[in-house]
Image 1 (cartoon, rainbow, N blue to C red):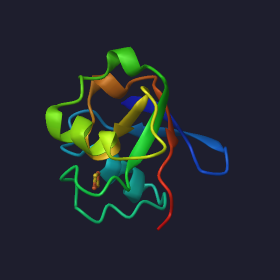
Image 2: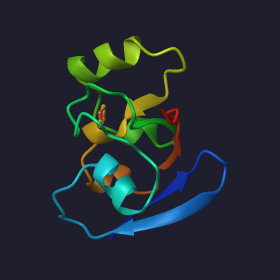
Image 3: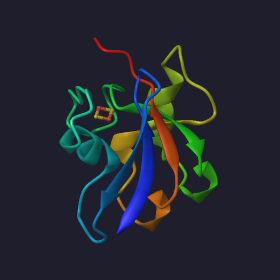
Image 4: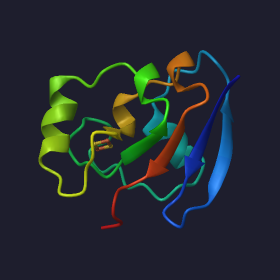
Length: 106
Ligand code: FES
């Protein structure tokens, strides 16, 4: 199992557990866990509604590719810890990380 912590927009944290080897990205897991994420682009790094802030474990994550960086560059409320959840595959890279949902509700 892969375990990580999600902090919602109200600041409440929850431990999420997902089986290893599932072919999903973090955005899909967050939606399946009933977090309010629109994901209007379906995971193409085009809508930024899955934006998260990585509170712990950023160094464990695969670096962002150009399409993710380009989208993050267009947003007003990003930091160097910001990522798009749809661009993070569910794998060992997520083990132990803490992420905060950082996108606005549109
Ligand atoms: S779901 Fe649209 S950018 Fe991630």
